[in-house]
Image 1 (cartoon, one colour):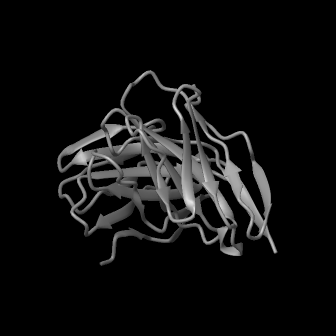
Image 2 (cartoon, rainbow over the protein chains, first blue to last red):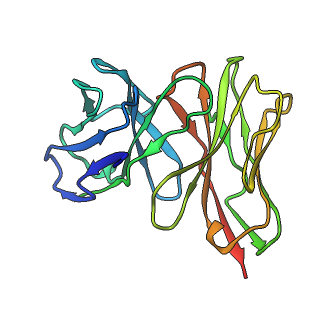
Length: 114
Length: 115
């Protein structure tokens, strides 16, 4: 049982480049989310999805796009990378809106934009 | 507006002692969930414990317990019998309403367990 798989683990981009961070889960979780973590700070929500075909913006969506064509996959696209997007990106999934299900997190992608 | 506040940037505790990590929250939604996560130096995020707004009893999971004081809007994490492996960053988070994919995190508390 792999849980939540994020690729790549590390990435260096030049300003203006685009890329897609991959996230896949094999737990049949309905809910998936993307967060970014800047040094010394908590996680901030970028986008989230409550099921295939349904996505919504979080706190810091600008510069990012998402889509959810399947239950398993939730890729995050950086449209035109900027140094301010240097961060650690976490994908997370959750089984249910009910009760005591916390997130299962991926191992993170450390992105540096130069 | 900050919805989750963790006022202790860093905490120290002696091995085998108990420690309380503070968390206060702000919401007008009567239905919400409160979570604690652990982030070791390796960077992964680990779910520890959950408390629902309608739960009558404080949540417990092994050595972790959540001291939930609804009227004060606080959800402190208590770790009993601290171990060296408890040294990590701890995050309090809140989910408002019933949208499981949308949580707000505090800035975290770094806990260091001394031998």
